[in-house]
Amino acid sequence: MNLGYACANLTLAKNKTKVCCNRSMVKKTFLRKGIDYASELALLNVKDLSEILKWNVANNINFFRVSSDMFPWASHYKLSQLPQYNLIKSELLSIGDYAKENKLRLTSHPGPFNVLVSPSASVVENTISDLNIHAELFDLLSLSNSTYNKINIHCNGVYGDKKAAMDRFCTNFKKLPENVRTRLTVENDDKASMYSVLDLMYLYEKIGIPIVFDYHHHKFCSGDLSEKEALKLAVSTWPKGVIPVVHYSESKSVHENNSEIKLQAHSDYINNLPDTYGLDVDIMVEAKAKELSIIPFL
DNA sequence: CATGGTCAAGTGGCA
DNA sequence: TGCCACTTGACCATG
Image (tube, rainbow, N blue to C red; front, side, top):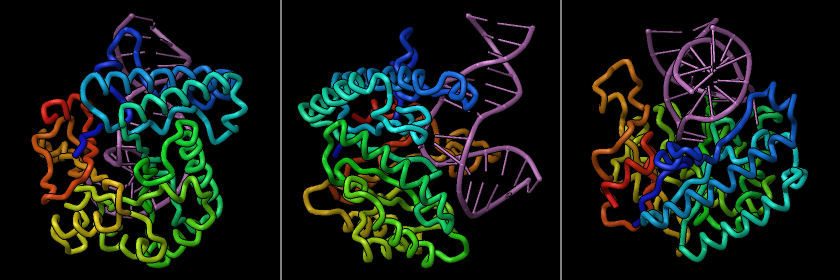
């Protein structure tokens, strides 16, 4: 069992050097400075990914979610067009080697704008483009073509008919290149009207895509399964030889005893680790305090 | 240099 | 209708 955290390291971010992997810019700046500046930021982001992974190794953390914002405005150019592409490429290659040597599990979680179930062709197009960028990054890192290095998404839409939406997911899944398809996973949602683990089994049965179980989301969308049942079902969708990933977080509203905050929002820290019911899983902790939240449990 | 308004993208729930 | 929440606040104009 490995514990991991997502995207950013607060300890390093507070350094004078401001280590971070999601330097970006607003639209106006992108229009003004263009791909040259995007390249500079991307190179800094990539170098800092290396710093974070080194810190992780030094602190016995070998599970980490890579930021989806490594390349600012990446959907507007090909990575190979970046002026510093060769430098970025070689840096990523060496990070990939480092990850392999140290048995680091790297995953990703593209944002809520990825909607493979969308009835809109342009939304699906943009989704495919974003997923491609994630896969290209993973290829440059020489990460495995399997859900060991998952690219995990939600369905992100229902439109009044889950089955029809999931059918579109299956259709669009077939349009994805191999380096995305082999890594793609789906996660249960945190709204009752959306996709429970049980709902997502429909996708698994049709296209064999593994399900990431999120403990916190399950509380809001159980599909009438107990936590144990839903976890076991999700774990059963993972291929042999790949340890399933689960997500764990706690409610900010409960932590801070503040009913103004939505129950779904994530707390800074966690009080417990989840019950894995004897299953071997890697736990991605989604807490605002990032690495600080898991240190007590290592 | 500190700070507050603002920021690409999709969706659903809620006040 | 507009804000919040979602895997992560960061950028940048202004004072």
